[in-house]
Amino acid sequence: MAENYNNLLKGTLKTPVVKKNRSSTWAQYTIRVEKRDLLQAKLKKYKIPTAIFYPLPLHLQECFKYLNYKEQDFHIAEQASKEVISLPMNPFLTNEQVEYIANTIKELL
Image 1 (spheres, rainbow, N blue to C red):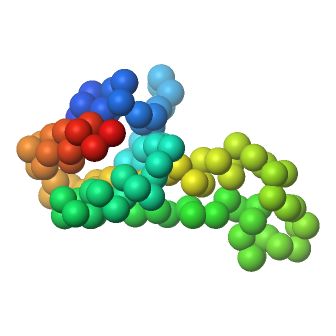
Image 2 (cartoon, rainbow, N blue to C red; image 1 turned 45 degrees about the horizontal axis):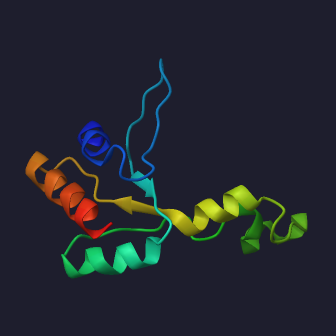
Image 3 (cartoon, rainbow, N blue to C red; image 1 turned 30 degrees about the vertical axis):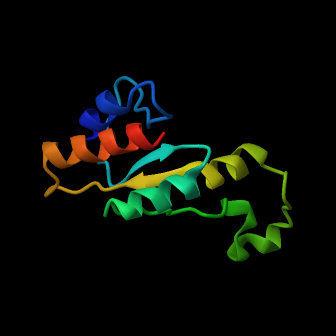
C-alpha cells in the first residue's frame, strides 16, 4: 500500500523514504506539504481522514521542558512538525481507495 502511495504521489510532494536494505511496518504513511492545514481541510470535505501525530517537535513538548530548549533550537524539526500529515493506512484499504486518495491530493495541489 505504501508503495502505491509512493508511486502515485511521486513528484507531487515529499513522501516517506525507506533506505535500501531496510524495511518499514508502515504504521503511518506520513507526507510533507507546505500548506498542510489547508490540504487537511480540503481532504476532509472529500471524506478522506488524516491525522497529525506530532504537531509539536519533541523539544517543545511539555514533558521535555526541563531540557530548556526553545524555539529555533531545532528549526528543521519545527518546520517538519508544521508540514507533516498522515494519510489513511490500514490493511483494509483497497488499491482503489489509495488511488482515490492520491488522485484527490494531486488535484488539490
